[in-house]
Image 1 (cartoon, each protein chain N blue to C red):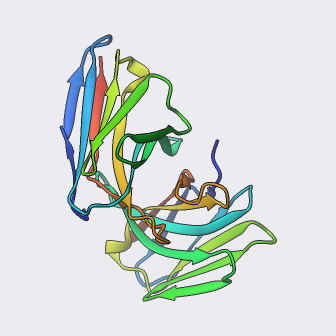
Image 2: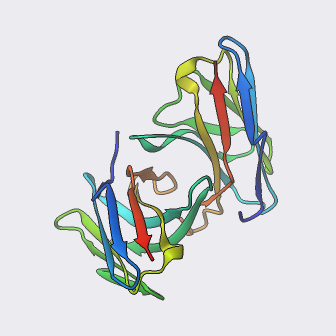
Image 3: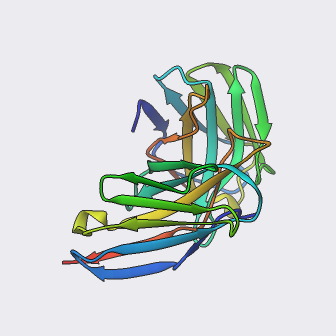
Length: 113
Length: 112
């Protein structure tokens, strides 16, 4: 998985609790992305980062926030989890610099009860 | 909003046959990519075709791109059981070249 890890890999949480997912890369790539994957929707972009402390919203950013204080780490936070945020979350990276292919982490399966 | 739409949603063929999947998109693109996802795993990049290219090959994969029709196809020749997976097309726009929009995918099953 191209030097990308995600933690935790599985999590069950209750509605209303905060949740933070972590993506860690060892490739020193500039761009990092958070997607969610749901049946019937494919992958949808939540937030992405184009450098340390540089982030922007994706297609489905409501209810999520992100932070990137180091090149290697990109955190996704659900401030108050809802059942609609039950999903599989994938982190991806790309180097930019004319390269567009993305490399994906193994995913985090999140269940909000 | 979905930029790429794959067709068919599911495809089941016999091992050794060829598999063709199609992708249509809506806006002008910079590149189009195809990814594979095995069950329970992350996506793996297969091939990228630039907007000024019409065809590209990689091993048993052949990708075509028709920008006038805003469509692409992925052909897998001589399929193997290990090709069983979901396949996604992804496009990036000229404006946001580092962001991808994925289609919903085609679920390919290769029967032994």
